[in-house]
Length: 371
Image (cartoon, rainbow, N blue to C red; front, side, top):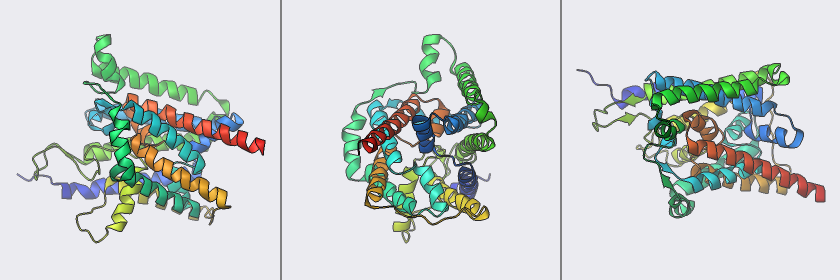
């Protein structure tokens, strides 16, 4: 009997991740998909166009991910978002700091990669700072504070922190029924809100960006959780998800993978280091964005404006690296991939990221008005 091995599945996992990330990078560049920009448009101008694009992406991801789950193609409880450990303080602090950081750094992790592909040299610096800060939070100096202080504030939820698990007992309804009902209610409700704007209904790029980004996240769940899933790894005799840094099924997120990408380059000659689902997604987004920028002739070199601009981006990169790892994700990692699992921690993180970003914009506007 021939047994499937991780080595046989790895090319499919990496290939799938790269193609999906490439599409995300290209479409993100074309449609100007930017979560920081979405908050900025809303706070500063009252324009909800890009917020609606982000919300549409969440809706598509919620419907698609839970559809895969109900079909038995993936098990979302195997993701890092539906863990029993509800680290509420980490979600709040990490989310707020990430929101502040993405505002100072002119965009979140995914936007940093998209801008790199378009020739933005500022984003190269932000990428490196996010990567170093994230690595320090994963395994270094910042990690001690994260583990010994923030993660100590936690509530253990034996049945998991996703909304269907939390509500099944009190409502006396099966979890599967609640997955169906909640995913439809949330997904369709968000779609209805997104398209309630006449301006958005006429915005082709906004609709394209929202739908494609949501589908890309769904595709990532399928690649990682189905294509790369082994019920029993012949080498360890344990369940395995091939090619992921966490050892769990993963979808797209763009903070920790930046750290692993930098680590891979730094330890290039260490043969134990391999390209993973997250690392290859970083390459995919940059190259997808670059391909679109070159094809549309929008590729432009861009550098820092002055010392103040440089300082803001450096501080923003540090905060995004720390905040993203602490909160277990970014505007894509928690805001779309995480929310698609209906995890309470992801919803809380999403709210804190938006709040941190909005508050920073309000403060910056006030500060400038006082000058």
